Image (tube, rainbow, N blue to C red):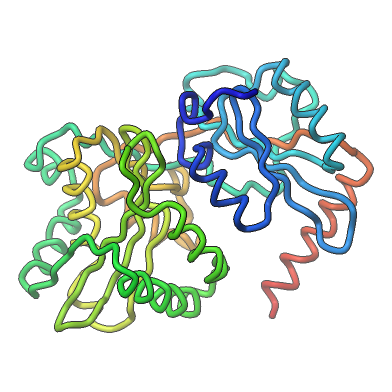
Length: 319
């Protein structure tokens, strides 16, 4: 019997709560001694893909265990994205020969992490001047940010998510996915459990911004956000981030992981550039992780899958 995965998990996606949520979506969850793996069916086939996000650094023993599971579950490959900083290891990709750099990483290699043990004055001082200015603009407009875990606030979040994805043209999870996640994770009694909170920013009785925040152990996470195209001049999102930081501090958390960023020299043409710059303005440290790797179980089908995946994304882009 595997130990309680929360005792070794270092990220929400390896937590017991996340695994329970994924089970509700119809995904198979397999727990080892030090990891939690999800198995995803490839439509119209008997084959699957394994996904191991934010895991410990794989050892040779762990790789053997994953290969064994992969064969039983008919995985073409298992994608592994360790929650380990690059500076903590050397030549990771060469230590285990049958791992290949992922052709389609799901998580970014970088993220911003903010030290919540600093004082509010220090945090404000470390921000970009434009970010500090935008926070003051929102405050002068009278934007109010509150924690609101009600069903009504969650419906507002879904509504704004629909609006945001349409406006920005990116792909989002289904409403059912978000509903099941919220039902499973909202406000637990213990921070050792993965817990979801909802923050809303309102102006003139209208919700302009909704964020879902995760708390796991000593860290605050910002996985989901949605905003209205109305009243953009109020800079409500800037105040939302500042209030989220203060929310984490009030709860005695030590870190704020902003859930992904571009690299140290981002391309201004990248679709995520604006989001990266927004997060960067708050003065967090840009962290580089070891990256994303594929443990190939079926080499022949892996090559075919890579071609089909590229074709699928090409067709989605030209729609």
